[in-house]
Length: 149
Image (tube, rainbow, N blue to C red; front, side, top):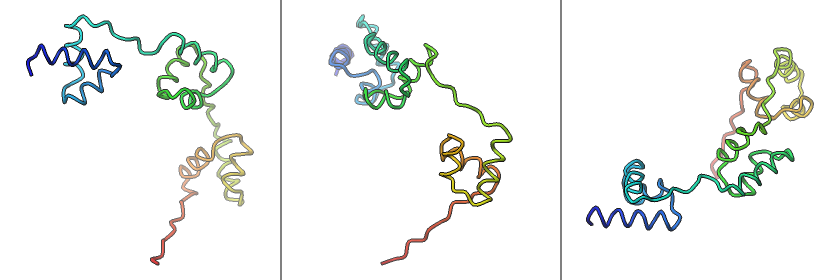
C-alpha cells in the first residue's frame, strides 16, 4: 500500500469515528505517526467531549452525583468525567483522617468491632479502615485454603 493510500485509509477510519489510538493500534503504527498523517490531510480533529455532554456532566455534578456514577450511566471514561468535574471545582475532596481517628480505628478493631461497624460509625469506606489497620500491622487477611474435592 502506498503512503497516499495509507493516508486515505487513515482519514476514512477517523471520519468513521475511530480514535487516533484505535487506528494506530489496528494498523500497527504509533499514535504520533497517525496524527501526523491526519494533519497532512488537513483533518479537523474532533473535540474531546461534545459541549452538550459537558453540560450534562456539570448539571449532574452540581446535583451531587459522583464521577463514578456519572461515568457509568453515561458510558464514559471515569477519568474524562473526573477531569471535567475538577475543571469546574465540582469534585468532593477526600477528607483526611486525623491521627486520633486512625488510632480510633485501631482501638475499635482490637476491642472486637468489625471493619464494617467501624466504617459505618466513622462514615468512611471499609477499604480505608483496612488500609489503616494494615498500616498499624493489626489486620492480616485470613487465607482460606480450598480443599480438593
